[in-house]
Length: 294
View 1 (cartoon, rainbow, N blue to C red):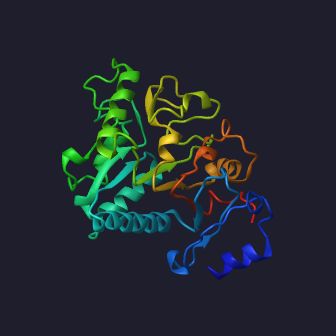
View 2 (cartoon, rainbow, N blue to C red):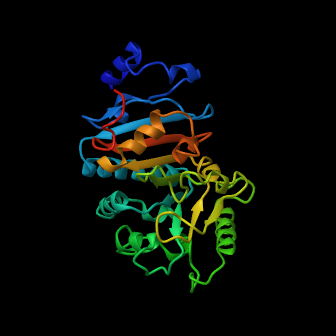
């Protein structure tokens, strides 16, 4: 943590973040595992409460640390008498994270209520299904009751289903589970694509990310399969915590563009992430962070 404070005092990162007039809470040194470099980058929006970046030498260490954070968040919700409402994401690194979580003995499984941040319009047992990946890793031993699992696409024949109806159905699920008047999740897990997409919100399609919706349909995703559902950034930003997980050198340009590039959320959808009353944490390995200014 001393290294972080030295960076802030010296202004070695430059002035862009300071010019926003934000007061950043970095937390105590004990918040960060030994050997982990953590420092704030320029804020993408003026209503962000807190932005953190954690950089790990290896992806395995990242997954273990994030697993610990998720357990701590879940236990805090449980201690407050509530559920831990978590939206999951797909991808190679999240698969490793879910495997790490499943192997732990301190997960308060009874507190978990699970949602998805995006999904392909395929059957639940299809190889492209994010739900299936979670079932095969995090939920391999059925630790969470079925009524606390909320797959995004539950239609018996999603190939023929109307995507707008599926989006409206999932919006109702979210409102019923988290509050009809002010629906919000406790945490959302997201990845970042090499092109800069988050969830299934792709560059150049900002008009799809409607601020008045919780869930929207995607009919022509540039990444197959083309038919999908995704949470909107407006709904994601209601969450108490957003964890953005990025590993690998193929993502380095997208990380740099999103964190340090000009404010252009149509090109870099991750710049729309600005939890109004929560924390956004970037979880990066060294390869993904390799092009950042330091």
